[in-house]
Figure 1: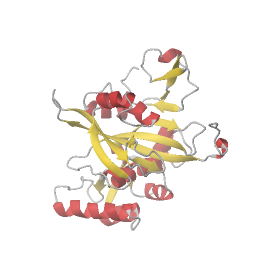
Figure 2 (figure 1 turned 60 degrees about the horizontal axis):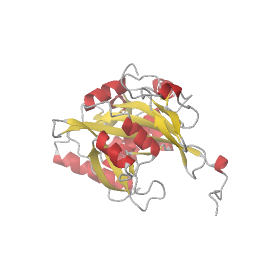
Figure 3 (figure 1 turned 45 degrees about the vertical axis):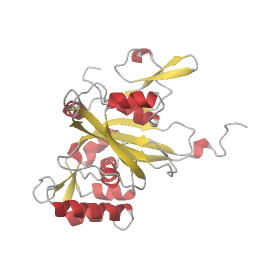
Figure 4 (figure 1 turned 60 degrees about the vertical axis):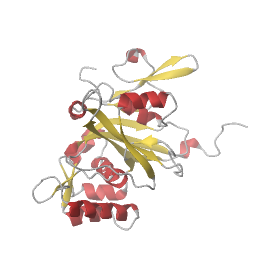
Length: 290
């Protein structure tokens, strides 16, 4: 038996995708501390079964249509510049915002007529958004229809571009994924859909990394590496402020130790001398000066 795939890896399309790390401070023994929202995928999933992930998924054609007229806080030209693409950059922001609503029930949007936040203290509004989300996940409504009916605009200024990972050659599914970070909106409560996502939790980055290293919390490598980027921050406001700096992306590097290798983020000891050609990941979220 060999590990040779029954397909040509060079023909696997690379699909554009976006994911968002939602952070907030939550009670801990030593006071409020940063937590990030993570979702556990169902074991029935074709891709990433039983994995812990952030809200995210593919960039759809609809996302480009929404980007053309339902987004505030960022224009298409600036979005393209930040991602380093010729066109279509703003659709990644829309995809991250859409997936956050689909998978976690969090809507980062503002009322179109006055720019104010959605009033989630109103039970009728909360119930209506829940119905919208159920219909969206059932394929009965589109995201564009929902934001038009609610008369809201997506708030791209609330999420910050912090990383870029490309699945290396080999797997049967490959993604070109942009990572974003956002502060959790006041009053909104995360909820998984009990279909594609079977559990959600606000996790502390340090313990979560320990669980991953002990094979007690399954994560794909980019998920874990971006979680590592949160380790220097004890408060969510500090992480958001660092993300908003829009630092230049730096590629992760590899330090080989025998048959194994260790991935190093910018600022880690040994990063300067690491191999930059093995991992296809670039990160922007780090302490200034590193």
